Length: 428
Image 1 (cartoon, rainbow, N blue to C red):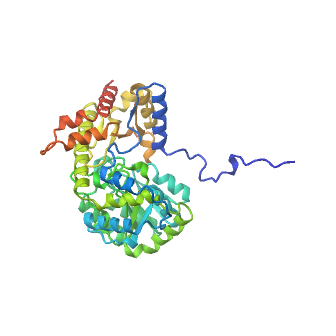
Image 2 (cartoon, helix red, strand yellow):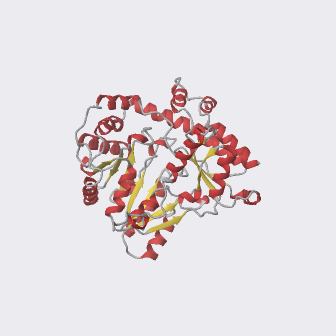
């Protein structure tokens, strides 16, 4: 008698019940609805609307023939450019020997949790993949739920209380600033207070700063500035350089954690081997910066600074609670003030809310439950990226003076239409 083939019962328990990442799932569903002829506004996946800067594209074109396996840690010239970038931006202390390059910061975050046997502390609302990665690696997760009145930022006393209750176990704090999903930032005093707690309890901080260059005032402050000995800075090309599909992420370690960088590199050598060679060569140009890239960033920030506060005020005037972001292209929308009206429409969870909004208006969003919030919390995350970023950048970079807000908003269609439709639906 022949043996039976493997079935679902052979799956590792850690993968059972785990679906696709919420952001990728909503993008696929939006594409499917569009193919079926539906009008869909894609505010689900946080993909940068802006094109990759032409100087970086030129660098990729010039290095397209590069085909060799590169060092698992990353191309030496690229790691030098990354360490210099962090020194230039935030007085970083890392050298090329403290940098690890991977196929997206997402993969590097997974490897970090794989090689470290620690508790993972995650302030919520949190990016959709933090907790699933911890689950896949078998790590213990602690969620620290933040409050709207604190702009959804974790407070030092909250972190300190958790550490005191939990004893001396090893911990990694996943600190995301600017935040996905809220667009909130940590001020320098707030970072200093958190650093004091982390230092007191011997915590390592993974500071996810992928949106740092999209802070509207251009003055992002890294956690590594105030806690250099214990902060790993995560960044990459996906958000500020518009190159999400290029899949290049970076970790910059303090010298005292080089053993951790080496352990991750060992794991990487047995998994992804090395990051795409042409992409790494092109990334050198991105991290070197210079006038063209600064102009690109100033234009990107100008567009977002016009669009995001306008969208926040539009939804706020419809009855939603929205904290105006100071960075990134996200809005965190709370419809709790309208709970009674929504309940009369059969909407009592964030998932029901997102589904009804999509069906009624074509506006695709993500429910707050995807971001480690209670299912009954009537929150949604909006990624305001469904517009022609090249056109918007052109409007922002035309002329010598400050760009006209109305001109920038007119270039952000259909996102602006989606916000108007959502506001009407909320009122309805």
